[in-house]
Length: 255
Image (cartoon, rainbow, N blue to C red; front, side):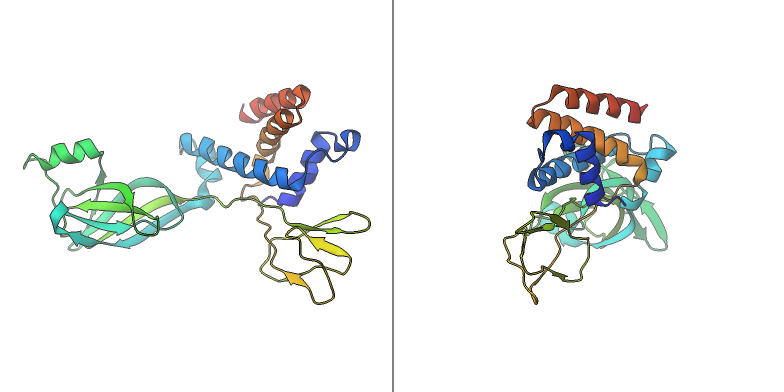
């Protein structure tokens, strides 16, 4: 885990904030960090398990053997269930229990599903079940649709969504010194003479819930995070030198 406050400080060092002043507000950093975080996640997913390093980096995002109860929908000749709310990407093949034997479920495309169901030789059975992932329930969760409709439960392995990094803080109203809040469920006191990022004015008994979320990446991804952030900061300042330096650093970290 990387503290988001450390990443912010290191980024300021990289762009020489001491020479150019506070050219990167925390609110802007939070927006860029969210985008960078998702870009890195998608980059690793694009190369999912092409090597052991990739597998290790994504290890903390893997959820195994998640059971999903299914409801039969006779009119569509299938059974459907809801994927977990933090679902992002399926791993391997789902499984069903056929008596005492677990069967692998083939994930098929919409077109393949219709073609297979039209032919009794390829039509899904309990021995050779199929599934599609798509559609949403009433609250926006993705669904899984399994054939045949007699199946009542399916187990899936998946990659969960990544947490969005965020840096929360309060500012001394006189000195303008910024104090970063940790990622914690413990209420944080905002002292007298300070103001929280939400606008809450501090006092002896004034507390807030910290909104800070640290990066879920390890130290090995720190260079990649900083290089991508530098490219984005170089665009918004704008500063071509920072942009080029960030690009060069990214290329080196991927070699």
